[in-house]
Length: 160
Image (cartoon, rainbow, N blue to C red):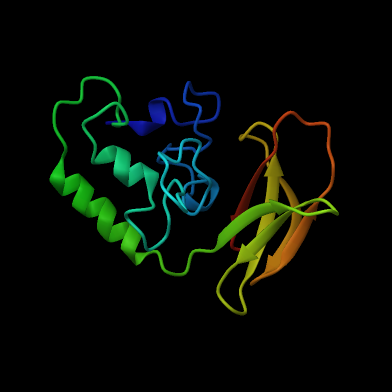
């Protein structure tokens, strides 16, 4: 299946990740990125580094019900493909996590990364044009200023 047919900027998918093969993994909003539909999985991400059970992409690839991906013409699960994805997910032990929250002051992003690592925080309103916001360090907090954008997306990248 070609996930990128739907999962791309301007694609028909509601999920906010980019499955094009020529997009760098750091720009795809897949690893440790919030999932549009968590399937009621606690701690779910599109791909949760190190956890196949909290990786929505893997759960949907391995499903044959109404949550299955791809959603059309799927008649069986490819166990070799699922095993390959599983081994990749388990290998992602250094990928940073970030959480979004709010308190009495404002909304915020909290980075949970490897000690001593720095990450570039970028923002977008359309998933195709990204702006550098700041550099975050392991376990740092970034306040999100109030904006009048209907939606705002964030991603973390390792600096070049």
